Image 1 (cartoon, helix red, strand yellow):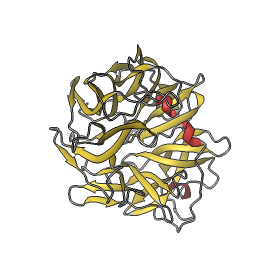
Image 2 (cartoon, helix red, strand yellow):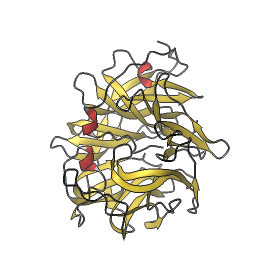
Image 3 (cartoon, rainbow, N blue to C red):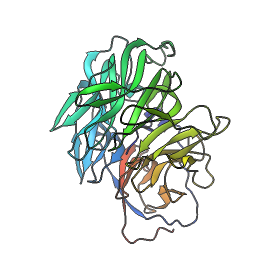
Image 4 (cartoon, rainbow, N blue to C red):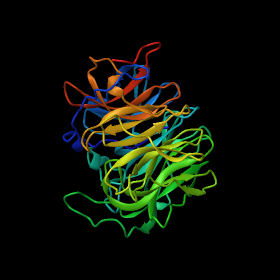
Length: 399
């Protein structure tokens, strides 16, 4: 399963520093690296990869717009939009090739919201509404909302159930006031939702939280996400949401608070697998440091740790074998993609060819073949690009 988390804004790029990790030889496999490229522009972002090696994400066109994109076997497909400028795909295609995401429409947003966060992330401003979509048979169909103007779809399972979020018609009193230097924040309440057979169902938040989102869904119909309060744009989750509670919903909508690693805030789920394991991020005690977690019904929330010497981490995805991928951070502006196998966090940059032209910043998705996708920086240009890692059979991982 994938995560929309760590869709780095272009503005964040200037602050990112690159640090190599000198660490002991690992038991992890080594990987080949594929630069996925863009759609005529210079930017792309990969979020997930399925067992057929179809990578999902977004890429820039020559005019600067961002479009939902699929990559497979050297071919790149532009999925278009719902009439607006920008779109994105977060989750992997399901078994019958259905894909979900979010796309701007041609309809002006009455509240002037940048609901899907494209503008805040560096894409061209549109001023239009943004809706979740279902893409199948080469066509993009908008999904309904909960009475508001905007929505987003984040993941689809093999039963075609879709997890995401949608606005209601209720004004959200927790949203910050309009700031002309930063743009319009969210205005209406944004609630976690599931779509089944074309019908939308609102999912409950936790502890009276006014807002939330569902970011992942497995083939048992379980969903993971978070709830919290409206906020300024959060570049970690690409939402106007400050998360408080990491949540798991059963197929009947029953919600469970997954707890925390000791902190009171910053708790959110990013992905899950078909075994019901959930990954995400949680503040440690004192709310000054955050670490990635793995949660299961038997163990509860467990800290995945960091690459040796680092301070922060975020777990973004987990496959059915329990392999976790995400981000490890020496500092808040230093990122390196990492993988965790059997409790051992390893910098993925130590597992790729030493002459690779890419530095791997995030590992957003992993499939059951162990292939990993995410965001990288081109060493020669500084451009942000999506990548795909493929394990090299029979290789040694030590350097």
